[in-house]
Image (cartoon, rainbow, N blue to C red; front, side):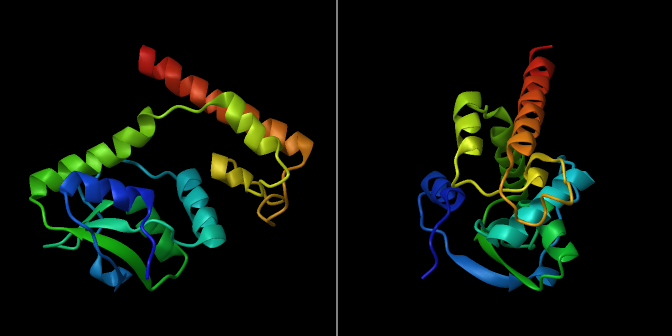
Length: 174
């Protein structure tokens, strides 16, 4: 029995019914041609690293009538680049207009979240955290080897994450 991700649980709550996760061929899915979210190479690299390390832990959200991806276009591109043949999806039987609105909402709500810099710093200092610098959009060969953060790399990663968070805040307020 598959476990439900947080996103699937939120969609279930929003639509008032349980959603079924199923596995489909990637070839049966189409990228949303109207997707306003861009996926530059550093984002796709982070997605590939995450998929390589953790696998797919969240289903793509797909419009039932057409196979158009509503949520997860970047992950679909990354999966194809990695040579995957299948992935997990949740299908929604909603109108094209609602699908477009949901796609924007799924992307925009993630943008509006903020980092708790103290909590992030604490997580990055903990011995239990094993991550990749490319998760922060800064792929470096020495980190791709699944090595834990060293003190200098951890500090550089945290500075980059905080810089990006500060840049986003100052952009949003202008």
